[in-house]
Amino acid sequence: MQIIDPEAITIERLERGDEARVLEVFDAMSPESRYFRFLQATPVLTNGMRRILADVDGVRHRAWVASTGGRTLGIVRLVADQTGDLELSVAVIDAVHRQGIGRRLVETALQAAAESGTANVTVLIHPQNSSSVAMFRGMGAEFKLEYGLFAGRVPTRMMAVAA
Image (cartoon, rainbow, N blue to C red):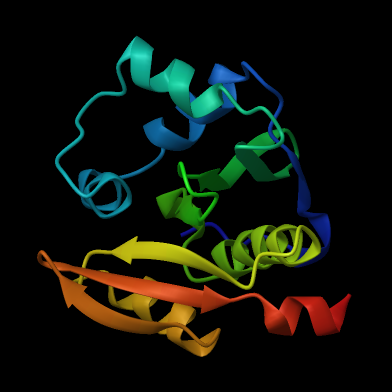
C-alpha cells in the first residue's frame, strides 16, 4: 500500500476521450477489484469499452478523476439512464485503497447530482465488496439483494446541505 497525502490529491472532471486515464486506473486494479467494479471477470479493457468509459458528455455521462503527482488514483462516474435516473460507479487503484479516495470521489459525484436536482443515485455492489457496502451505508444508502447484487439508493440530500 502506498500512503497518499490527502492534501496532495486533486479531483477534476475527466475530459472527453481521455482513454489514457481510464486505462491507467484499470491497469492498476487487481482482478478482484475489476470484478467488483464491472460485476464480472474483466481481464482486459477492450478498445470499445475504453472508448465508452471515456465518452463523457458532461450531461448524460459525467466523470471525475482523483490524482496526485501526475498519477491517476481513481475515477467516479454518474451515468443517466433513459428515465434520467443516475447510476454511480467508482474505481480506485489497489495501491491506495482504504485512504478515503473513493469516499472523496463519491462525495464529488453526489454533490454534482444534488446540484442538478437529483435526490438519490443508484449503486450496484457485489455483496463481497464489504468496504464499498460499508462506505455507502455510511452515506445513507439502503440496499436490497437483487439478482445476487446489492442494489441501493444513495441520498444526495447531505451533499445539498453541505454546499
